[in-house]
Image (cartoon, rainbow, N blue to C red; front, top):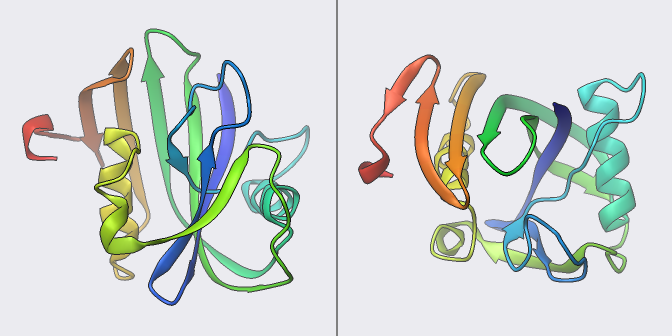
Length: 160
């Protein structure tokens, strides 16, 4: 099991995303994902988030809000606890990313782009600034979302 972070950096109604197209054997290949990555030893979620954003984008977060945790369960990959953050306060200039191409994507268009189906759920949750901290469990078979449980309540997959 691994711990990771994901930070949705917002500016002018857009999120900074990575079009994952540079690494071979990348489980996110050709998908859009927010900056983030794996915890290092002894890091807190906040420390990991700030470090990963800086490493992948060149941006320094001034502040970030810890919004929720997503438990990914898969028949192909190890279980992952992904700590979700949002930020609209940052400084610095974008740099080239080793993971893929950095792109600003309109938040309203993102749901129709190549993302994981379960990402739609937490993207809708973080779009509402009044949504309290959430716990979301997503279960996949291959790339197919089979089950979604939000705050211990099952969601209907067909309605996502």
